Image (cartoon, rainbow, N blue to C red; front, side, top):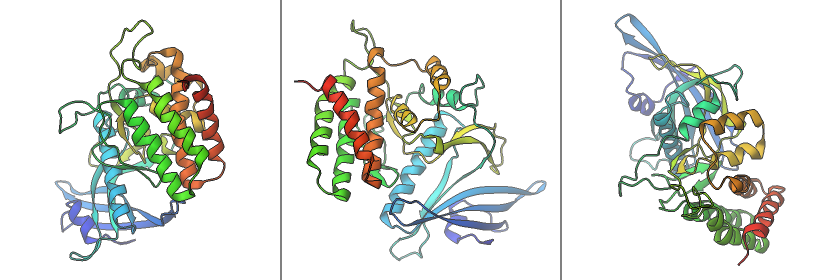
Length: 350
């Protein structure tokens, strides 16, 4: 156990008479962005009955501006999810620099509620605390309006990170525009920065962004039946990186209030988008069987045109193949090319 840094004590508004200690562990992100230190704060807070224990989870990083932006994105993502579905993830409580005032901030921290994990995640029962029901509630709750326009738009107030890939999340009125520009073309640029020019990959991504995306996700089409009936789609909060490694059974502890245990998520890279976007990475890495998706779609019906559902999910899966190629290189390129070639043959004709 070690003392809690003063900036964290102040940010969490821990009383001066409380006893707080920090236990840390060092873990590498494996993404070429250095090390992230994670830890648990145990604090004894004065109360009417003597002392109450508080627990907090803390991440720190010495990656300067990148760490600041990453923790800002994670903080906003967590709180967007918990605002829609309380208890589905820990609430972000504080973030900021750890360096001495007046110096260039290199080390930053993020403090959240403490999520105690353990047990067996249930992916397909009728319990409202299961992943399928909590995710269904998240995906049926309209996102917050854009504060600048008062309209619900596709995007997010701050950049987020999927792995160490920065996602600008500029607001758009069109989901097709957002997905083409803020996901596919952005990750193509990131990939070329890291892996060098790739004419074949660029041609495929650009054709997908300019031809396939408008055809499958365009306004007046997505959310409408073949006879033109429908209302389009409403932006909802999507987790953004929802594979099985970012979900588990657990509960918030040490927060001063009782929380219902259940399936929980963490490490989000959220945006306001189409609910089916989260299904892309669920399909990519597997672990969620047919019963899960059947139950999910009883809560969140497949978007019209239903006949194009499988192709849309592949289009959303594509982003994660491209992102993994940008981060790790190697074999993820072939998976991305396979998806694009299939979709271009079907939807990319002039």
